[in-house]
Image (tube, rainbow, N blue to C red; front, side):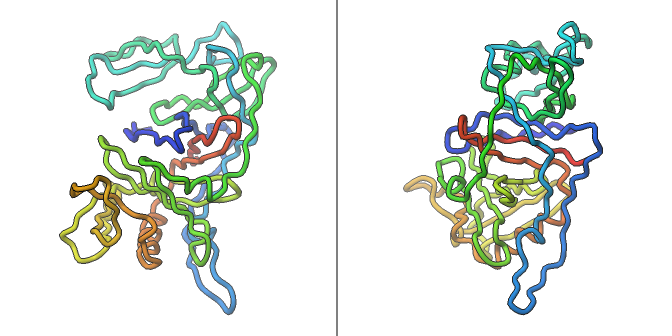
Length: 306
């Protein structure tokens, strides 16, 4: 899996970045299908026909209740544990991270991290159980290892609740969201994430059964470019999708400065259709799913199509 240097967004100031994937050994298929949409007499196509993403097989979640717990290669506390390595002598904000088992050779150019992987409050999706252990998914944007075992005595159950549109649309300076509530694009979700270092990203997904799904393939690099007549221009290439927009669909980010970001509320139905029609042509190999845990807030997990 390629390293994706995308900073995890903080939703409502409550999101603890935790990205995992569906790493079940079952060959569960994740399909993103683009089907032709048509309006028949008295019937309008639903969002499911535009962005069709099956929910990942996460039915149970656990939260770490001890200050520190190991993640084991096998259901045995004597087996190797998962460790993290950080790029050595890195002065950038985007240093490389790598994960491997403790019995593997040291990684050249990296130093062993002192950060706790399974710290108190960390949530994991459960893939199975074996004796005194849960098998949990640990794969994230930087980790190619799919699953590990954790002691049942060190975790507790945690319940999730459906995400509502009004929760998503509570804005802050970093995260802005628009959920389309009617028409052909009902339940399509547009998320604009702005970071001073990384710039602006538009994420396209769907709100399905109380869970938000935003495929990484549907992430669009966005930037303000006022010297264009069209409100938005999309460049779809092998390197990614790039969107340029002018003031007609922008909001000022700083008073008195020529600094703008995309205003999702100003996008027309035609512009939204152009954006959605572009992204759904891409295969969503990795899908970011957001769940809401009332005890802690919204959290993200990655589902990997197999």
